[in-house]
Length: 227
Length: 219
Image (cartoon, rainbow over all chains, first blue to last red; front, side):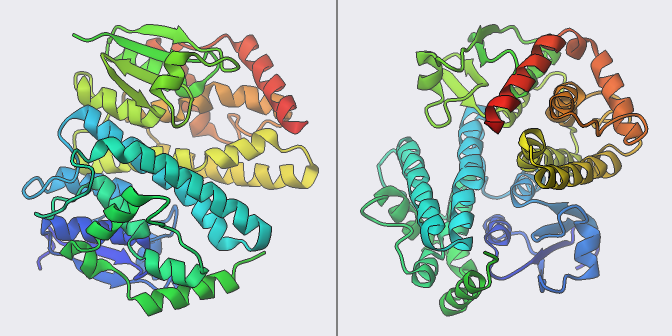
């Protein structure tokens, strides 16, 4: 690949934020080079490309780096105009998608990260909060699917689908590692059926981190979380 | 043309982001002041998830979350664009807006810290963030948006006015012409922009409000 239009993604195999970018690139049919980063020993290039956060994902396009997964998604949408759209055309529909993506990113993720890092009473409190927020999300999503259940026949997945499946796609591994149900089909049937349907979409399925490897990583992180 | 209404609160920097954006685009709107201790049915109906201001009502559509509202306004009224046209430059603008948002918690810590050790940590972290904003986002530009203000300036606008009241309430001055010369210069330039100058809450009232709010948090 020449320098012109070259796309490189710096990532880490278990990162949901990296998954978002991978899935978007696949959906759009954009060829890219993937570079796996060892987060305990970050490459000079990564530190150079993302000096502010020093994190993955970073997308480099024509030698120019972009960081922050949701910013990268908007960039991909605006730059590669051929192929499927991941955001709706209508500004109000876009606002709804951005609102809920922000809710997942700021509210829900916050509770889940707190839960993952804590144990005992603190952990239970954080999980309770996370479930409450999932319920808010479930309620808010009811209007999004006219037929009631999510279908993705022609792989027409969008921004919010990508945000959701990046976080909860590996829910079975998360549940095994934590020993509790995170996406319970009885408590959150819409989110459950949505995530399950998304995991069947080839671009998503291919990007799912290997189950056992994921379980082992989550358990390792939990054991080594600072208390 | 459907009517535009803004549900806001006089002291909210988030509401002001929307006010500035609407005014810069010359969009007529009706402002509705919310009593946050006694939220209206209108607010609760149109932002059931967060029950917060600002909320933009456009015809029968309701948009909540200030940054989501800003992008909605930008896309619905594309005249006088506040984001760059180049996709990469837009990504950089969104990156910095996102950066500011991700640091709200740190600024809030600075605001409400009382114990010495807690305060020292918060000050250190706040100074680091201001440094990054000054050096890597603003750089040598007049405004974050370049020669004219854009959405990044609007997103950071609270630093130009609300932050001083916060510093006063905390009793610690961090941002001045010596510590952050470029950011300080930006503040002066930003406040001179007519739409901004004419749309700021009363300073004394705001500072008193910040002080009271801080006291209520420290209890």
